[in-house]
Image (cartoon, rainbow, N blue to C red; front, side):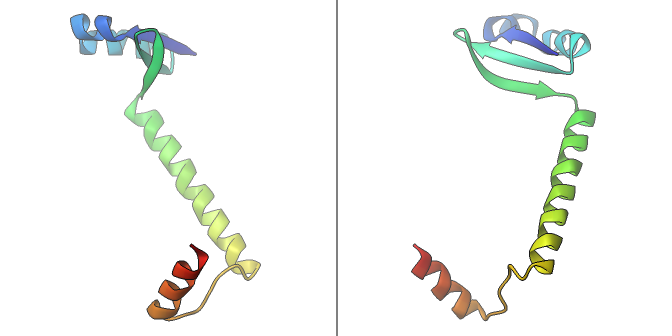
Length: 86
């Protein structure tokens, strides 16, 4: 569930506005001129999200290795390949 904080409310109430919004929902969205601009999540939620991203990256890397989607090459060969792809 999202809680919304206007930029003006954040300016006036500061961290108290953030704490209240986080207690009401898992995340707080800061709006500026009626448009959603920023999202705030607790450090615990951020760490869990980051861990999931890292786990997904490891799974993807293992899949690439198992399916031969990698190169064994020198730095110069790598740079040449990158330049030729552009």
